[in-house]
Image (tube, rainbow, N blue to C red; front, side, top):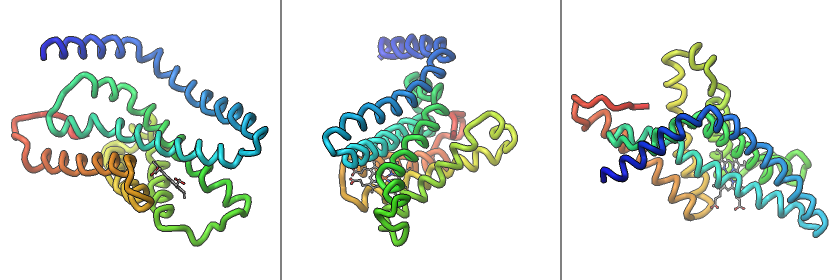
Length: 218
Ligand code: HEM
């Protein structure tokens, strides 16, 4: 137990020291995505399967966004339960960058699986199935979180910034429905687990936690 704590403390210190170098490096992920799409598209054009390539990439962007969203909300959940492990502090170091990546991936997911087909009149804008309407609502709310994920907004909005970012609880449930109404899969079960943990951790924090404790509710 002590060994595992030392190991985590070591890792946290190393990552925290290197975070000013790691954060700008995360931006290269966006270039990697663009390069992947350009080269991938190029090879699939030759095979005549370009639509399939974009669609499959789009679905995986959605799945990656969902996974990262789970990672981003994990420190808050564990914090409310009073679980303090260094691994969650490492996530907290990159929380903002990961949140921005969630929006970029979710937005690209939308464009690749539906947006482009709608703009090119291959499918109509209305009516859309309910699971898509719920996904669009989640994307819309994530957009506001994305717009306000900077120091300027945090300072200007003050207490309202925290209130606005609580919208993430609603986003989780919208995504439970977005994925669950398509099919019961590892993705719908994954996001359902996080949505339930969010609710139970909030209930624990506000109703059951020992009052002397002072852990975070972010
Ligand atoms: C925050 C925003 C979103 C996230 C995180 C997200 C996530 C996901 C995930 C994880 C899947 C895969 C489900 C599975 O494999 O069972 C999926 C599928 C899908 N999503 Fe989204 N989604 C979002 C928004 C949207 C929006 C706005 C639309 C379109 C209006 C959309 C349309 C679709 C479609 C059509 C599929 C089915 C793909 C297929 O398997 O054929 N999504 N989404």
